[in-house]
Amino acid sequence: MESSRRRQRGQSTANNSHWGVSFIALLLVLISGLMCFLILTTVKQSVKLSSIHSQLIKMEQLQPSSGEQAATQSTTPIQSTGSSTMPEANQEQGEGTPSPEASGVYVVKAGDSLSSIAEQLGTSVERLMSDNGLSSSIIQIGQELTH
Image 1 (cartoon, rainbow, N blue to C red):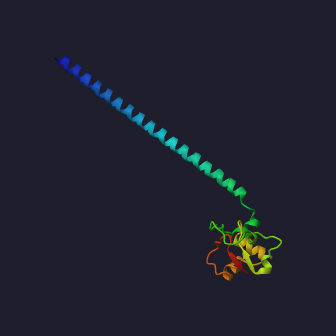
Image 2: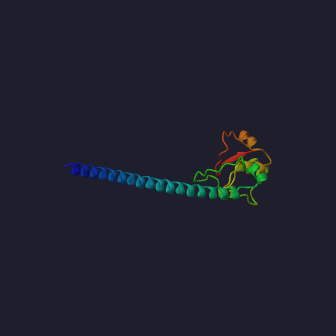
Image 3: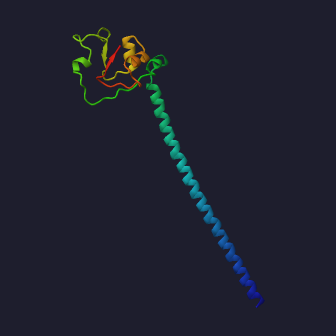
């Protein structure tokens, strides 16, 4: 009887250690799975950042040099109204159209900005804005600016 109790104790100790080893193995599997997930997430973010970085480098290469940059700092994209009330002959500078310097009125064309117009007319952006009652530098195609 004594030997049978010893055998049962030995079996329960063996069963307990078996479950302990299984539990530790399961924890190791879960931890390694979590580590793999974290590594993959980090690599994915790194690839995104690398892509953004290369796009920024390309954009920097497209920007004008520092001398030209000062002239373009106050430029604003032109908002198109979709329809222009001005005839096309007035929108483009042709031989029959008086120059903007002579007429005192400049009609905004596609691609114009206040800084490019100011430079063309030999004035400043601030002066154009005040002369035309503009509170922002947003201009539209076909808009008439006095100078």
